Length: 160
Image (cartoon, rainbow, N blue to C red; front, side, top):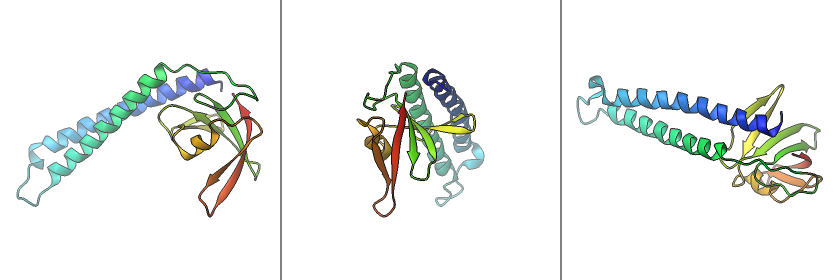
C-alpha cells in the first residue's frame, strides 16, 4: 500500500468510527433523558451515569472530527534513506527476532490500525514514546522500545 492509499484508508476508518460514535452518543443521550431513567430517589444514578457516557462519546466524536480535519489537509512528504523521519513517514521496523512491522507517523489518531493484506500499519504520533524515539532517525538506525526492565531493539529498515 502506498502512502496516498494509506491516507485514504485512515480517513475512511475515521469516518466509520465517527458514524458509530455519533450514533452511540445519540443513543446514550436518549437514554439519559428517557422518562424511565428519571431517578426514583436520591440514590438512583442511572440518568447521571448515562449522561456521563453520552458526554464521553460526544468528546471522542469531537476528537475524531478534529483528526479528520487534520488528515484531510495533510500533505504527504517523500523520504529516502538519508531523510530524517518526521510527520507522514511510513517506517518499516525489524525486531531482533526478524519480525517486521510498519508504523505511520501521523498528527493524530495514534493507535489506529490499518490493514494491508496480511500485515497492518499502526498510526503513531510524534508525542508517543515510539514516535519520539523515531523522529530524526534514518534508515539503518536503531531505536529502543519497552520499559526499563524489558527493552527491545528495533532496526529502521525502510522509510517512505
